[in-house]
Image (cartoon, rainbow, N blue to C red; front, side, top):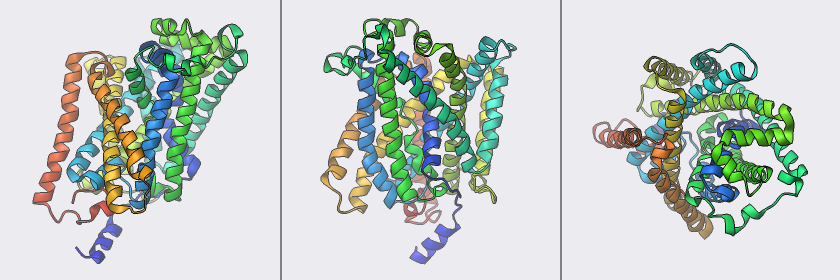
Length: 487
């Protein structure tokens, strides 16, 4: 195909529109990360069941691994300027078969985050209304429908509106987390003896399970990678996307590492593991009340709900854009790649994702599946899938850069990619070994879900092979320079 034909096809592709700057993109990505949920809900679990006193070090190690990955990731985002996220990057680096297989699996992972968070949102909002506010005791799914409707409307409209809503929610979350950290620090932790940095000592790195701690920590950074997915909706993507990527990783490392260190100090180094193991939620509630009083504790309870909605909305928007890109490449029906004339949003894909979420809710209601069990299983799928896709991207990025980017230092070409591949590969192996634990402890369920994930990857791999043989003119040979695609 000639360069003229390639350019004509490039111009004929559907393109999203937006005007997000650094802060809008930053808040949209961090909101998916749900920092308050991590601090209030995940850190006590990690202390009790993961790395114990070594939890802060787990976050530091995870941050270092992902920062090493980001070196090549952001470089590739500059020289391959198009949407598609990991789907396009893996296609460009490892070929269309691996790319489409990864794209379908990544789509599954983000949709599971959306659907699972809808259910969890209904549970926590119901507990807030009935347990804390003495309101009516209504089944969780009525509250889930509120989350669903709000995310459906905002996801349909221009992305800047979602970014503004997420910014407001995230601001309140950060205020609560920072307030808690400052209060614990000022008061010197349990016994008011001052903050101890002993948990950072190598003597405590292996107090618990370092491997599980690293696995949990890597999962808490989810979302940083979707910066490239919003490329067409960002004002200056070549500058903004790398800055946001590093900023998200840095913020998560500092906030999670520091908050876990202060949580350990707030209970006491000698007592925190036992307390967190016996009652993860209760131990954090006790810590919040001890240092921030009932006001801070109640505020955290309320904002866990807004944080959950932020995850719902962010995961919805990410899923819609994966659907949009798969549709633009002819994998999903073409109607899903329609762009709203006024909002510049992937409104057809957004509507499809919302509809699928509603169907999922109705299925849970009528089958009687436990809400928390369902949420746990879908969260486990998301954690495993996204880690796997990041690992493949970690392999694809240096392969692509070696072919298309000259003048890179040995650090960018070899050292940092090697660190990320080893770290992410170790995390993926651990996730596979502990997959039953990630999805709720059932070996039967874990087997079924693993078959689903692997089967979807194989389906994508096979489809790419079929398209190359039966539809060679479906996409231009240099499709990877236009959109992700199968060439």
